Image (cartoon, rainbow, N blue to C red; front, side, top):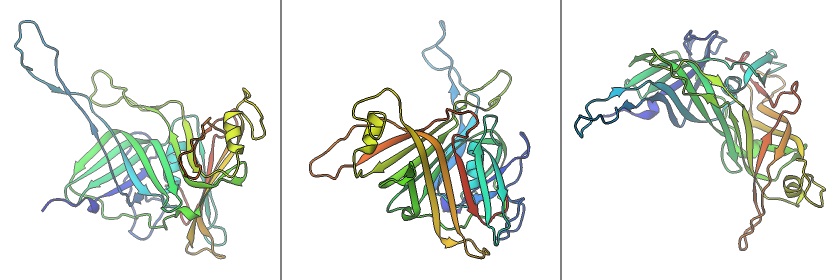
Length: 346
């Protein structure tokens, strides 16, 4: 009869230490606690092995045919696409950035999670992925978030893509965990997503945010079949926003170096960016009622130069790229504050 993809799942748990697998499911379904991981409803994707046959070069004296081939070293990587929900988002952001701190009591003061980047190593993750129902379940140890992408347009939902790389495939079995606490918090719609530049709402039709840790993923070593380690290199934080401009201010900022410039200058103009997500629904148990929310603040960013491209009778629109920078070492390149109903970041 075949296997139905929709019957699979993906669970993620932050490890206490490198090399130690932690099962994402430890509690009772429907009863979240601090020991649980997060299970994502996802649209597609997989964390799979990357491996090739090693074919020897032709040898003088041999035949014209390939005499043999061996399996090369293996690494594990892949992406998952999902609708972004507020219980899982803190875990994903912490994995992509580095650290998180939580406050609140869940009732009069909802739980608030502040996620900030680190310059040191990033959290290691344990991942359980079930492919269909009864086909195969993979368990990965020492996974990292290489890329995190969030996007929304005015007529759609907030969506995300997470790119993972793992050092080890812990076990392969047809049996999956039964205790799975899925993130069932509300999805966020485009009308509840706001993008601000210098404190003012941009007339945006769509946006995307990308965090790229640029992990070195080819550290193969002698006497080993797998990667030796995963090392993050330069972090890149970029945004793309499609806008319908109301004046030429942003064009002057990007091309000439300032909103009031009258000619090109050499210094780029920097200002703050803020992205806010809010749900229609309230967090259960909060009194007075509080909605799910997330605010990502970038204190210093630059709009990349762009050209105006009119076409026929089309309304002028710009696709602008915004690049986050960090000129002051003590200032985080971005800070995300998420409000939800979980007491900890898993």
